[in-house]
Length: 108
Length: 491
Image (cartoon, rainbow over the protein chains, first blue to last red):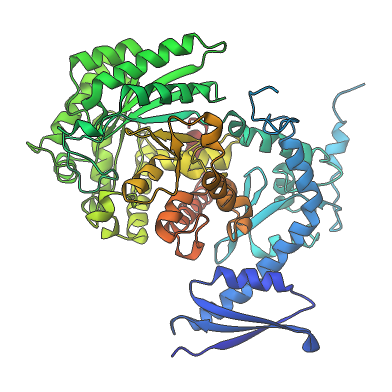
């Protein structure tokens, strides 16, 4: 049986979503149990690798990915408004949206 | 009043480290151990090292940093000098998705399942030549033509497929003539074009006369040198190669040099022969090649051809081929790899070439639709191949249905929605999403999941490798960057 290992992340620096997304990316190599430990302000991840190969690399990759996911969240939150504005502007005159809800090229 | 800001405005870049800038939407993905690729919402990209990326996200990148200027020019940030960034990005996004509003342009008619070849990798459940029960009827053809001409798209391409479509030549003539006549009666006639996907083995003068008269383009199969082609594509007489080459020459003489294109399929026997395959295309006067893996449908699954090699083996074949083509160009030979050229158009221009496998929302139904010989309508060519294997998940309906009914089919809309890469797990965070696509038929066939588990997906594995390879090659050599720019702009 392959040995499990535990990773801990500071809940003040990382969100649960960032940790979840990072684990999801490595679902092919391991399964995960994620717990938010409020009393310790940590997010605990129990990692169950599928093989014994490259456990150190897996641990390192998950840590890097959590940091990347956290940065992605920062970018996503900071650009949410402008992203919606750009998309609304981009699709405003495509004809994909008809005021009567009919498909393009069909009149009421 | 001048329409331009004074020159002093451009020379007064903030020199300190506290430049005020706003992030614009972007994604990033590791290119390798020391670099990230970042793409903006319109698909423009930049390669950054980790410290620069962290400084940029943390608003600590000095305006004097060379990366800052590029990030601003490519709309990753806006500052006092570039308030137009969001507007320009919106225009680029609008241009990129322009084709969506036109709906389906490619209408594929499966004229017959009959074929005189017996290729073991065939994706279609072909039938022998004498079984006319597998031919399209006039009644079905007329209904399908009416549906094709109902599409809002002003450019309609009708493609004939099989089996071998020229084995049902009478039906091809009927469809071309009927569609052309009906088109002239529309209040706004379509820009109507035709293409026949054929092995060229049975084409004769009468057929060529007809193709000349109605401007029917030819798309054929050429797998490589004679031995490989004949091994991959057996037929009685083992003369598929000879017939294809003679057919290509004949079509060029009658229709014109650029009226015939060829496609190859990679089998296990092809893997060590990528240079020989490319040389064959060069010697036959083609300007490029589309290096294609096998698709997991039909006979390719039954005969276990699909599993004969894995994604890594095919990627090695692809990389070797692409590097060889780059080397040929370095020696002055103008030759392209079409899959790379399609991706490069998405990477380096605001245009989307509309290649069905690399569209999101998925190209099924939106990019192409299939009218099968029996009157069934499928969302893509692969969808009908899946149906031939007994899975009719992507059946839209029949030619007796209305256009609106076919395209508001629940399964179709669910597949589009669930596979939309912009909101699909992992794809949503991936820097390559603007260049990639959703392939719900592939993922359904492989995993019974429209979106697909990416860590198991050969589609994801293959495309990620190719995207990274294209970026790395451009980054490492200015010659390749210039070459790829030319490919992108001619796609």
